[in-house]
Image 1: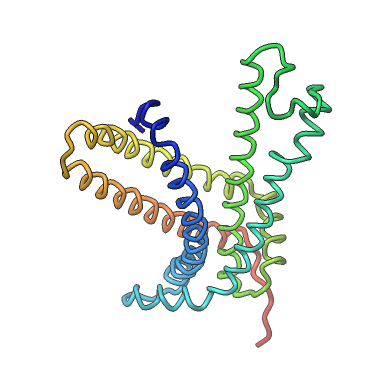
Image 2 (image 1 turned 60 degrees about the horizontal axis):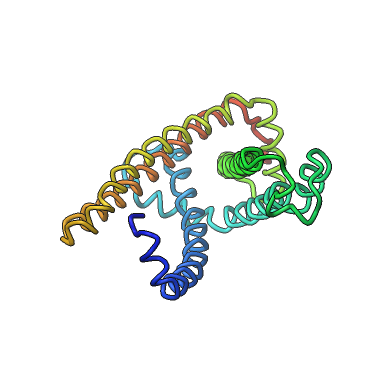
Length: 255
């Protein structure tokens, strides 16, 4: 973050190659994180739903394996919904309905906004677009958490049917479902933001001192952020289990 414009200009070729390599690596790591998230979600839910004491790690691994492929299907449904949200907010739907229909911006100016009266108006349009997109992605992620909780609670297999039923449950109980998810999101964002400010201050110390200790502290902060997110994720599933037991109607099963 503290690299100046001259450094970026002098090393633009190397930085461009680095960005390309990081993008490819990030895509594969993102896929790995999704699969790992499916496993850990099953682990959390197994621990919370199985009313026994002890051997938590064994039960966690058992739950991760038991629900893995069902939750992978839920992740697939969530990715499709995220693609739909992106198309609606950043694709043709946004361009034709909002930019052309509501704001009267011609198609050749959808990217630059040169026909607008002020730069502040263009900034507000981009801000609204970013906020709507972020809210849509957050809604899909929360929907996925409640869907996985429902599937584990009722021991069902259909990710699509569970997703539709979860939508109905969230519509009937928006405060208990979305309100709970939003609360955990705010807490997690606040903690990560505070740790991020500390990491940003240390980022400049690496350049000023040239010593190893800021790098080591940055590594510890990275682990701290991961620990915070893991703890909040477990707490979020625990709350989802408790609320789902109250609002989800049990299904009839043969004896």
